[in-house]
Amino acid sequence: MNPSLALLLLACEPDAPAPGSPAQAVAQAQSQAQSEPSAGSGPMDFFPARRTLSPSGRWEVHVGQDRRLSLRLPQGEVLLDAPVDPRLSFSPDEGWLYYARDAGLGETEIWRVALPSGSPEPVVQWTGTADRPVVSPDGRRLAFISGTTGLASFWMVSLDGPLPVPIEQGVQLSNKDLVRIPGQAPEGFVPPPTTVLPGWDDQGLSWSAQGQAWRLQVAP
Image (cartoon, rainbow, N blue to C red; front, top):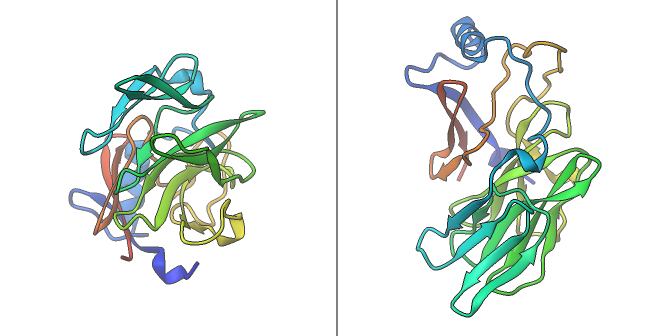
């Protein structure tokens, strides 16, 4: 993937200080309260069962306490996959559903399934965790949170080529070159969203974390 498609600017809102400035470092330290960042999302059973509607209301999917992903249709519910993380997202045309799947040993992978009755297929199968997927407005890229470096960070992959996407073709969007420090967040750490997925519009990714609004500008 061309690096020019990746990160352009990192800022926190409102009244965002310049990236890398002392003011930004102070703001981050205050909002983080020196909490240690997590390398992943934790056990899937931390999150309650959840029903999610597609943006148009065409599809309704459900992840139960048993982590079974199902699609509600007029004739009943159709099992799509299991076990999965309930923080999932639809492609812009609502033809695909993206989600994190349990890979065992505390690891998770990004998978997708064509709606209404496709077969699940892997998108990202890296070492560590990968979850909280969100699709770009044009449907050609996928952003998600990965703990593969030891710090929960935004990554992006292209959906135009063969799947699954190897880590060598991924682009790290946040916390690049930071080193995990036991007991505290490294300076410049950008906290990812937890329970609510980020939004992705023409200006990039946006989310709230640790009492602040964040925006990650991504080239169209």
